[in-house]
Length: 287
Image (cartoon, rainbow, N blue to C red; front, side, top):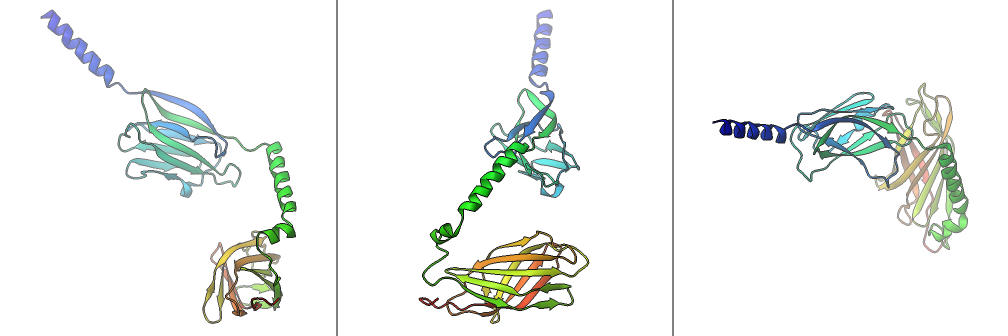
């Protein structure tokens, strides 16, 4: 009888030990933003919440995690993030987690990967964000300046942006949008082999700053030209101030010059259309 009782007790203890929860740990990790660094692993288990605390404010709308709402719940605060698996992760399962910061500084985001816990489960992780040193920033700035100096007319020609026909240029006149409060000074359009560049100065006569973020270029016949890129200098034009807009587009078909409508969309939903943008006609073999 005593032998049987001892066997039963030992069996119960063994089962309790095998089903005992993983040890709960708190630790810190450092993120650098270097794409060569592997993402930090976060050890999670069903029914146990993991808290990530950050030194910098988070962009809560931009947080991404695999299986959100189906395999894991996420609750984001201004500087914190709670994670809790809804199901046990498979032994080889890995869920990617991308956290974006809201202050515009580098690194702009941090990458993690959620893995099933074995002997330890992470219940709290303090995330240290390692910002680039001044020396690193200066080195990168010098490298960019050297690259810009190297991209002169020679590189422009080697890239195929010049040929025997050269570049044709024309201008378009001042335009005022009374309702929107914008004005366009005399602009210039440059047409080369396969490319079109529009250069126009914008005066923001409205009471709010305006940040252009996209452009469309359409012919009077309704044919749209593919816009490759647009940039504004500065990025946000202050109220009552002048800015420069550069729009790069594909060259219209040969012989399809004339007037086009340039529409610039702003981040705040306000747009500005210039209805008479002149584009030169370029005929093959003639400058």
